[in-house]
Structure formats: structure tokens, C-alpha cells
Image 1 (cartoon, one colour):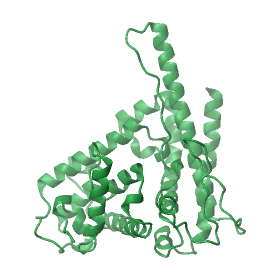
Image 2 (image 1 turned 60 degrees about the horizontal axis):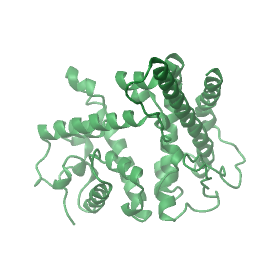
Image 3 (image 1 turned 60 degrees about the vertical axis):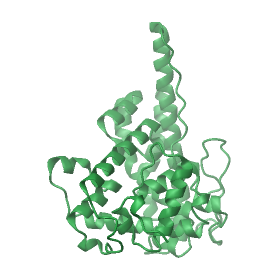
Image 4 (image 1 turned 90 degrees about the vertical axis):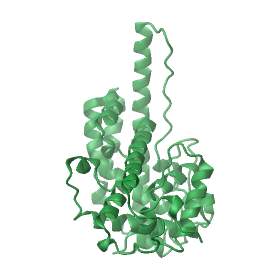
Length: 339
């Protein structure tokens, strides 16, 4: 137990100081990127693009980030009925060990992603954002999302380490029941946590639609975020989870900050649409990336078949030719314009 936590602490310590290192990348970058990314299933290296070449145009490689940007598989022991107290102790011990192994693997993945991120930054010109580099063709969609997700994970690791150091094997219970999902890196999120967060967001989205936003025949009128009607602004914020539901409960929503958050979300969606189109289309997204892409566009994914999600996302890409992103976010998919 002590050895496991020491190893985890070492990984967290390195990741905690990564933000300073990211500001001052190596002045003499290697000719090739870090040779391998962490692969959960087979530990097979995922080779990255050399610095002197353009991002890969192979659709599946260019569109889908490596598995190390997602949580590793979680294998828990099966609990049988009518267990004796000694057998229950063994079951809980094995369950705790499984969670420790899961978190350790997730932190290692974040560390490997951080090393890859340091090298990818050398491809981005000074003063440019990752979004601009993707627009300019300097990054593939897979590389862009590796950068974006790793930055998010690194910002969460310090608080997550504090929670884990205090709670240990009980971390999953604390995270789920106290709603501390925002403190957990993506690579350390258990399936129950991910599913619970999606269900809450989608329930909130459905309730927002029931309150009413825009009618289906008002197409092409929502262009400027700064002049959005308050109900639509709040709906987009709820639909994408841009502000906490706690603000709705207390009746005081920070609408002064929402336009900036919405603009950032629109920019991310716009550049991702461009990358998907450039990489060959929705058909080349794997199942998990398809769910993530649909969720980021305000589409419900819980309980829906993969092919149905692929059809809806393809419909989004077609609708973008006639409507703005904010216009689509304010409507149900059935009200999106058709080409």
C-alpha cells in the first residue's frame, strides 16, 4: 500500500510542476516526438508525427487521440451472494486494490501525455493557441485533443492528489457522492462517475428545452453571442455545462461571465468541426470519441446506439452549412436545418 502511494506521489509531483516546464520548453527539441504514448489495452507504442512533417492524414490516426487521454479499463471483482465475513473482507480488499491500480495507471497516462505535450508545443508558433495551430494545419485533431485534455488533467491533479491522500481506497465513493468530478483528471474517472455526470447534464439539458428557447421556424437569426436573448444564453450554458447548476438553485446566474464562456465553447466546436471534416468525416471517429464529440455539441448520448449518434453528428456537420453553431445549440436536433 505504501509503495503504491509513493509511486503515485512521484507521478503527481512531476505533473504538478509541469505548468512551469510548459512555459519554458526545451530550446533544442528532438527530431522526433516522444516515441510512444501509453496504451492501455496492449501497451503498443502509438507513434507521433515528426516535427518536420505535417500531421498524419490517415483518418483514424488523425482524428482519434491515443487511448492514454481516456480512463483505463476498470476491472472490479464480482461480488457473490451469501459471503462469509472473511470472504467479504477479501472482496473489499480486492476492490480497493483494483481502484488503486486504476488510479495509478491513470496518473501514469497523464504523465506520459505531459511528455508528449511538451514536444507538441514546439510545433505551435509563439503567440499562437492550439486552436489556431489546428486551423493552420500544424496539428491533427488527435494531437489537438491530446494537448487540450492533458492541460485540463494537469490542472486537476493537485486537488485530486489531496483527496486521494486523505481518502485512499474510498476516493471513488467520495468523488461520486460529494460531486467532486471537477477535481478528478479525465484519465482517473471511473465509469460510474462519467455516466453519472452525463446523465445529470442531459437531464438539465432536457429541462432547459422544456422551458423553451427558440421555435423551429426561427432559423438563421442567432449569430452574435453578445446580443443573445437571456433565455437562449442560459440554455446554451446549461446544455454545455458551462456553469454549475448551483447557480440555478440559488436563482443568481453569472450572466456577465457567460458570453465569454460561450465564445470559448463555440471556438472549440468550430475548430473541431473543421478538423473532423479535414480528417475524413464522422465515419472515422471511434465509438468513445463519437460520444465525446456529440456531448460537446449538446447532443444526448446516454442509452443511444453508436450508429444513431454517428447519424446525428453527421446531420450536425451538414447543418453547419446553413446555420451558426449558436443557432444549432439553441435547437433540438429535429429542428436543425437540412441541406
